Each structure stands twice: as C-alpha cells, then as structure tokens.
Length: 490
Image 1 (cartoon, rainbow, N blue to C red):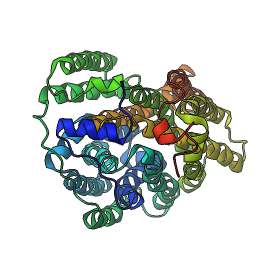
Image 2: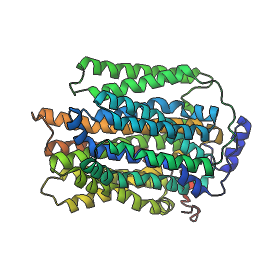
Image 3: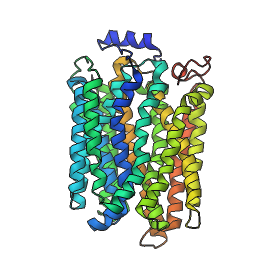
Image 4: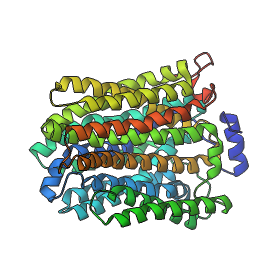
C-alpha cells in the first residue's frame, strides 16, 4: 500500500535509519535558491534551440544533424542520473549540488569554445554529467525538507525560476546569435552559476544523510549502457549518419540491456533501479504518464525555432521573441496550479489537461507563413499554459506518497525518466520531420513536413490521458487538498 502523510514517512525513515525530513524555516527561500540549477538548464536548452541554424552554418553541418548537440546532453543526463541519488547520499547533497553547478559552468565555457560538431558534442556530454548531478540533487535537497501538504506549493516555487530560462532564452539566444555570436549563448551560464554557488553556500543548510549501501555497479552499468544504446539508435535512424544496421543494432542492444537491468534489479539486494516504487500508484502514473507527455512537450522547443526560421524565414531574434510565448504562458499558469489541483484533483487535471496539451500541439500543424506572428504567439501561449499545469502536476504527484527513506531512489528514477523522455522528444520530432521530407523527396524540410512533425508530437500526450484516468479520484489528496475543504495552500 502507498504511504501517505508525514507520520507514515517518518515511521519508514526511522525504521530504515534514514534522516527524517525537517520542515525548513522558509520553504520558499530554499526552493528559489536550488532552482538556480533549473534556471541554468532551461536557459541553456532554449538558447541553443534558437541558435541551431546559425551554428549549423558556421560549423559546416546540417541543422537536423545538430540535434545531436541537444540529444547528446540529454543522453548524458539519462546515463548519469541513476547514480545521482547514491552520490548525494554518499558525499552529501549540498556538496554534490555545488560541485555539479561548477562542472556545468565549466562545460558551458567549453561549448562556447568548440570549433566543430565533435568538440561541441563532447562538451555537451560533460554538461550532461554536471546536469545529472545538479537537477535531481537540487530537487532532493528540497523534497527532504517539506511535508506532503507543502508539495504543490514547493514544486511551484521550485519551477517558477526555472521557467525564467525558457522566457529569457529565446530572445536572449536570438539577440546574441544575431549581434554577438552563437558561442555567447553558452557563456551566459557562467554568471548564473557564480551567483547560484554563492547562494547555495550561504543559505542552503547541509543535511546529515545516512551512509548508503554499496553502489550497485552492475545495475548502474546495465541501465546506463541500455539508455545510451537506445538513444544512439533513436538519434541515428533514418539520418544517413551511420549505416542503418548500426541504428537497428543500437535499438536491439538497448532493449536487451534494459531487460537484463530489470532482471538484475529483481534479485539485487540494493538495486540501482528500485522497481518496488512502481507499486505506488501515484509514482507509477506520475513517471509513466508524465514521460509520455514529455515526449510531445520535448519535441516542441526543437521544432518551433527551426520552423519559424526555415519555414517563415524569420531571423533568430524574431524567432526567439515569438517562441517565448510558450514560456510566458507557462509562467502565467504557475500561480493558478495550486487552485486547479485543489478544485479538480490530480486525476482530472492529468487526464483532461493531457488532451488539451495534445490539441495545442496539433494546432501548430496549421501554421504557415500566411499566419500573422501575433496569431502564432497566441497559440503558443495557450500551449504553454496547458504544459505548465501538466509539468507541475505530474512532478508533484510523483513524490506525494514516497516514504522518506526512498526519496533518493525516487528522484533518480523520476529524473532519468524525465530526461530520457525529453531526449526522445527531440528525436521524435526530428524523425517525423526527416521522414516527411524524405517521403516527399525534399532535400530540406518544408512547411508540410513541420505540420506532420507537430501532429506526431501531439500523439504521446494524448496516449498519456488513459494512464492518468486509472488513478483513484482521491489520489494525492494530501498534497492537492482536493475534497478536503481546500487544505492545500498556494
């Protein structure tokens, strides 16, 4: 049975010898400080998408091939995140968090100095290593200090600074690309990292984590190799980068290694992949349905800047100003999320809002150069509202019933699933785009190909709705306050 409420969490933690979560003196302050990591990551992701066409020209490659600069980072995240919880427990979450910020900033500097696609991809992999330790550990620092009824509020505050990245990223990326250089889009992480390090050192208290069991090296290796092989196959299939048989081999090897990882997890005493967490319904749906949603949501930031620049002929600056509509819509939704969950509950929000997300993505398939950019802006803002609600709801629900002693394992699994699904989203969108162009005999994607790609992006969120509908009506009520007279507070 799922464990719910602080008393149950404390009982499990005490039995396991794990520290009991302590409510912070100021949850909001801790959330805002650790969110500096999310700000850097989201700013980095949004500026690079805007700069891709210019980067491709200067590095002498195709824009679609440069999707490797995005997915290589996301693949590195998925490979290293499974071990992030263990590393945080072993060396201290605050210490690991600060080291991860430093690695991410150093890799950002190297990205800006890259002279070819190979150097850029290698630097992005190093960034992924830093990000793998940075974002999940930041979330762990916060989750260990809040009660279930604070979950939605804390998740909202944790997410809001991170949303500044997508809001600021497109216009900053466009302006820097057009007026300075695409290299500068990576260097803006350096001052953010410096401020973040100072704030974490000064204001975030260290926690006394219990020494974790021995690291499951076999499990970590199997999981990492499986994810890397799957992403290699997904990234290269149909691109002409490697022979097709190598892409197929990557898929087959990834599935085989994944099956071996699951088999190992079922018999290992302290597995890197704790499958028992999926017996908790809220965690299973939060991770499963949330991953489907993120595949579609992850395709949009890749497709939109390319579409506006290649399809509409817009500059990087104009493209950035238009695509920030999605982030503005997301930022607007954040203060209303608590109220929506209190009135409708997790099940209804995650079920029906997934359909709304799918509709807003499908609506992008109607874009063509005859549309005024203001109309495109409105559609993207509506999509940002729906996606923001889905992000926050699925993130919060994933943790509402997790025992205190399982938080490290839960953040590792949820973080891996989130990043893998976002990486698959880029590949999913790029594959639809390339396949449509190839079938039509076009050397470069045109407006009809982007239309097909957006329709393809709408499918995964639509498939997420039936999974969420299987939740009980009162799922996550301790966090949402649904049916409890508005217990949750924003």
